[in-house]
Length: 314
Image (tube, rainbow, N blue to C red; front, side, top):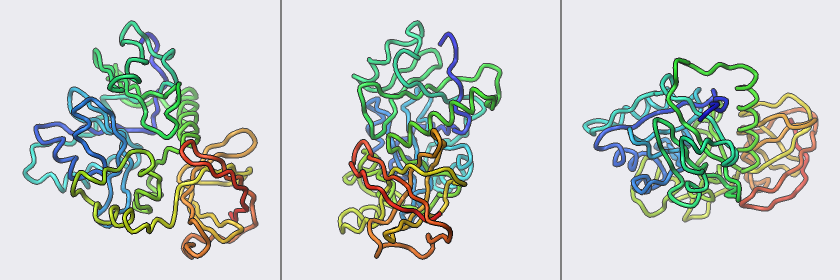
């Protein structure tokens, strides 16, 4: 690329390399990693044995091994946790955040055709391209629009870490806002191990295989699906000005409760994703927060239409 896109410095890259990398991941994450061998990037959950999502992973079929994109603040704990299950498997898990930078492109025009074929080729085909140390993968999200977003992963050239300047900060907020509008869930330190995969709508984002067999947390995830015990779901909200943070508990006027999973300023207010109980009877006392009633507009997701206006207690 002639001019590198601003780095998304809040993200890190883990690499799974070795003869058993795909087999290892098959036993650890919610999606079917055999699809990676066919050149498809995947969205997947890595969960605890209790079925709670530790991390949401964007998996790319890189030539050096499977790359996993996830928030920097949970990358090392996730790596150390997964290493405990390597045992005799021929797989090496590394944090490549110092070697690889992650950026995001909103359409094909942001990609340099001199280094890669047109991005439309990736969208129409395997959704993944790689050349001269640069990888481009279509983002697996709920929008799936005519103008998809792309991950751009490149080797660093002397810059050992994200610059963290205004351009990078703007890029992070813009990318997270795009995730929110696409209904793309993310797990940060404050929300790790808080939700079962379906609560994050990962079943609606092709991030769970219910036919591939066993993996960590599979029993709880499968039971939740087949018994219809999904009592909380990811929703998109517009919040008024205020002090909002990831993991913050919410209480709606109708008695439903939940937690913010991501929130970004937008205009005079904020846009957010939150896992909310589907009805008041499913509300959790642990998610009740005192405070004044704040009205939040519930916005439609690209894969589910809500359009409900609710009152929220901060």
